Image (tube, rainbow, N blue to C red; front, side, top):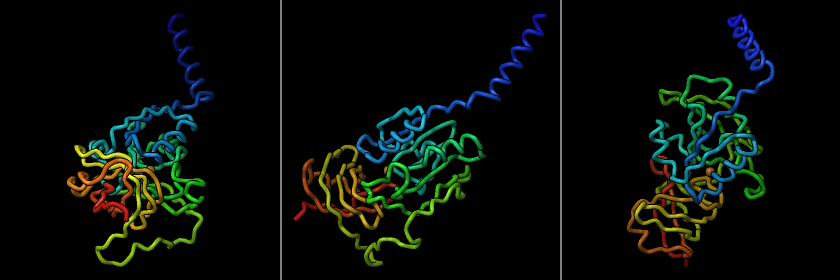
Length: 241
Ligand SMILES: [Cu+2]
């Protein structure tokens, strides 16, 4: 009698799960810099989509490394959800698909910060939508395309990055914060053509910590930046003329 009762209960719960219950989304943890505006926009999008997001304002480079995601897939924030790494501006729907399909993989990545990706879109970016791929990153470090975003511009278009030599184009910025101890600087910057990065406020590493001795918050500067081992790095900086 008791046993039959139990079986009945199990049967009922199976029916309930199958017929009605949406699988609950696992909580999502994200590591980012406190000053990353596009990261905050991405977090807001996920929350609006129903994700429970826990934010750690610690930067994401160390965490990305700890989670085993190669730096070449790097972007401005790193998340962990349901045992998967999610790097960069991945759409909420793509994360849901990952969690539903449960592929044998490390996770998803949108390397860099393509304009038009979720949190990097809208009037702020002139409604520009570039083509980009969401990559499924495999445990062996390889990847395949999980979803391709076609963009709304003629493919093949890329802003020129100047000549083929080593000279980087300079960009303008206002210094927001200098963290000499960590070797980091926060810049509210204009377009950085060689990184394909639109105007935003963003934290950079510096190639030489000594350059931070010459600048302070509020300064108007000209600078050059490059991507070094997956990290956006200021290569030179000088007061704006
Ligand atoms: Cu970003």
